Structure formats: structure tokens, C-alpha cells
Length: 234
Image (tube, rainbow, N blue to C red; front, side, top):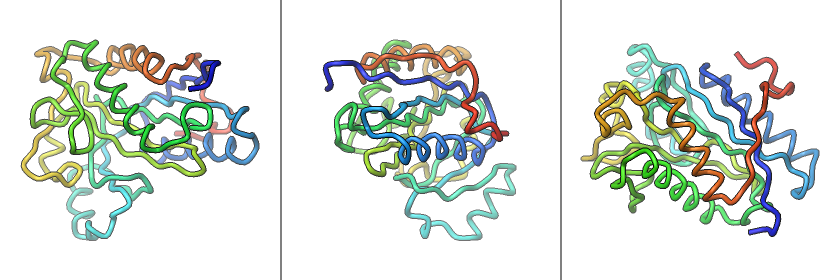
């Protein structure tokens, strides 16, 4: 890691459509990637919730138009993305975190980045009272055989996009219509389910930010408003 801790700006984007969130992170990543060398790259951590949406990763051919229509009829949107991983659900009550980092300021390794994301989420879950949360050979963070957090990232020229989806008080029935991340025989869970009480996204955000600063060895600063380059976000 660099001797000076990298600065990461926290953007609390609220709740909006998946396409709006995607537009925000792409604008932040592309503007930095084009205009600034790695040492001057402005790192961001975008926190948000999405309206109900199913997203699939690079292996989109595994999902047919019929699959897409079936899921849309449930009242959710459907998006094909450039992240890693298979199908998952995002929606209200899930904390979605998109780190937009230049790994040249941290460690120029995608493998290191994914492992550090996993450690960050595990640390946050431990802080919130779930000591059994852990990373396994399967993607994501697990409590027993139930996934509590999905991870799917994209990296280009060591600039990261996409990230994690941590189930806080999510309606888990949305997951019953898919095989989350393509892993058969496993379930999903949430902070609320594991802790036996309503666990809002805002409360989880505090633990996640604390863990992020610790595990990524960075400084965090809050962004008062959404950056002007993403002013059209809906």
C-alpha cells in the first residue's frame, strides 16, 4: 500500500433506478480515467439503493428473452451488465456500494481487490453482530449456506466499477424466482433475518464505511451533493 492513505469520496446517491445508478458510476469512472493520471484520480464510494431489478453479468447468454420477460412480469426491471458473476437481485432494503477506485493508488491487482472487498464486508458483518459471516470458494459473503452479500465487479485499466449488494432489510422473496449467482442448492439471508430485528440500510452504511476505511487503509470524505457530472441522475 502507498505511504499516504488514498482519499475516497463517499457519495450517498439515495434510491433510484438501476440505469440511473449505472450512469452515475460510469460518468465518474470515465471522466477520471480520461482526464487524470493515477496519482490524481478521484476515488469514489457510491452508496445507494435500487428500485427492484434483476441484473446479470457477462454470461448473459445463459438468460433468454423468455427469462427476462418472466422476471419483468414480477414488477422488476432487468439489466444485462459488464460486471462479473451471474444473476442477482437488487432492490429496496439492500445496500449497494460501488467503489470507483484507481488500484494504482492501492494495489494494482484485481485479485487483491476482490479479496479485499470480501474482507471488508466480512469485517462489517462482524461489527454488526454476525460473527459467522465469511468468504468461501463461492462468490459473495455467506452465513452458513445462505448468501448475505453479492459481489460482482468490473475493472478496466485498473479502474473499478460495480461492487457489492448487502441484504439489510431486503424482501428476500424476490430471490425465489432465480438461482442467485448461478449457485444451486444455496439460499439467501439478510441482516434483519440473522439479527431478528429490522436492520435499515442507513445503519448498515455506518458499519460498512468504518470497515471500508480500515480494510482499504484509506481516508473517507463525504460528498455533500451528487457530482455535477451526474446531474441528470434520476
